[in-house]
Image (cartoon, rainbow, N blue to C red; front, side, top):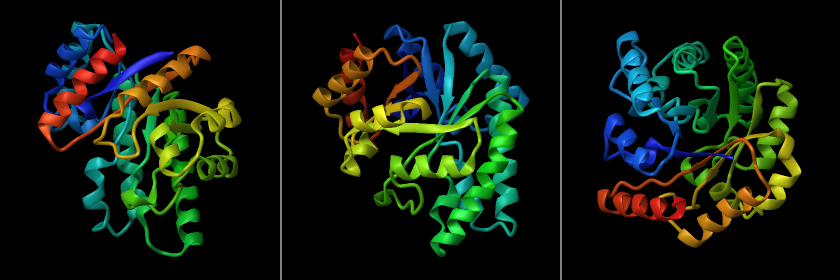
Amino acid sequence: MILCLTNISYKNLNFEQFLTEIKDFKIKNIEVAPSLLSKKPFTKKNSKKIKLLLKKFDIKIRSFQSVFFNAKDNYKHKRNNINYLTNHFKKVVNLASTLNVRNLSIGSCPSRNDYKNKTFVYDLNLDLFKRFSKIAEKKNITISLEPVSKKYGINFLNNIDEVFNFIIRLKKKNVKILLDTGNCRSERMDYKKKFRKYKKFINHIQLSNPQIDHFNTKTIRQELEFFRRIKFKKTLTIEHFSKSINKLQLNQKIVKNIIN
């Protein structure tokens, strides 16, 4: 198992401070939101700085997440929305390739928030992810589709069963499943059963709580132990988030104790 921490859980720190912190945890692998790497992560100048920092701390970015964070507001105001999202995705893929990142976790893509009829939303995303798959394939990058519950304002692919059915329909070898334990509990699903059922399609795992700002130490320990016991060989990220700095720092200490 390739254990990762994410910079989303360390929003109180800049990227260099985040690397310093996790170096102390003896963690060598991370998942990151590109928007938290720097103010303009897609420029050559900043991508070079990021690459030098990773080399300095001897840490690898294994996965990107929240790749459409800065695209959400602009999406609503663009006439040709598919081309807009495709162009944004190309920037993400190029940065990933530069930093040798081989997985893109995609959850809250703006196309999944569309409130039109279900058939329209399905066909829109089918077309869009075919485009994404082709772009990522050229750089040898895998897309891991994350189910996101309706409580977060997402109206498409709300649970792992729906994600599985979608990728089967999509028929693209580089589009896989992201299993999120917090989502499984939100959707009242047994993450162990779902893991066994979709094992060969799962490319990445995130351990989280149904309420992402709440950190259940016992649950996360049990989940981590389960994937260690079955000798899961791919990437797994422990994820938490809070708008409260005090709560964020408390959760960071808890994670450090769990890992050590």
